[in-house]
Length: 322
Image 1 (spheres, helix red, strand yellow):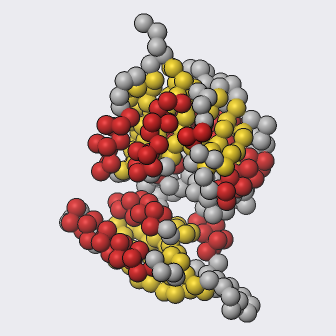
Image 2 (cartoon, rainbow, N blue to C red):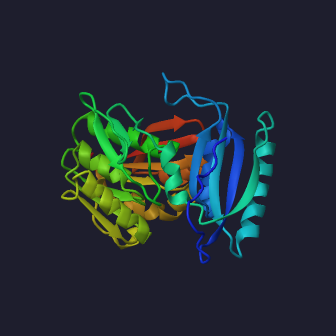
Image 3 (cartoon, rainbow, N blue to C red):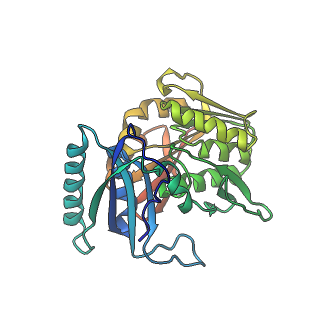
């Protein structure tokens, strides 16, 4: 099992302390737990396969994985750990046939998690035409491949997570379908690293507005736009979707079910007639609530894309013509 690399040199006495969590889980639960750790406030979450993946199929997973994450050692640490234990108990009840996930902890000072995860981020084919490549890796594209280069920093979005891959597959399919989105306006809500907005720009969008409430994420997204040379078509804004009043032929939102439920009135109102809404970050247990909020007139289900327990919806808005 790999551990975080040690930092050389003198330890900074003012460095923050973090609780390192190593959680071993059946691969069927890894994405669910990764999502839960992120919502819990963990930083630097990454996955490591405990058995080699098949070289023929990059989506084929090993039977067990290790998740490594860091929680700040603050007043909320014990409630967070209690919440994690309770969540593991609930998973054990829901999936009695699977081995129970287990975790161990270690206090780390200045652990260097901000860069250690890079060893696990490799070029990835996310869809038929899209390849996601970290900026520090070399890759030679073949004919027809569109390469998105990403340095996510501390923002969400490398393409490794199922919810991001599903969004990329949906975006690729929509732009490939009939050319109707060529030169169109796109809104990317909760842009993170900017990966989805950049993919839209590279696939032919005329203008992409990327929105995030995290100023760290918007800075990273702007840097990635420059690196991919799409800054002329991609605008990154630190702001709230509630302030927008323009309509968009395509809106993409890779968030969590809870945030999607909160934002659903704004997401629905901003889709142009005849346009599409792509929502992801949803697991199977959230399906009833999401469908109750989003599958309503004038929206209909265009396509549902799944990977393990993760769901991505492509919703189509009626054009208003009779």
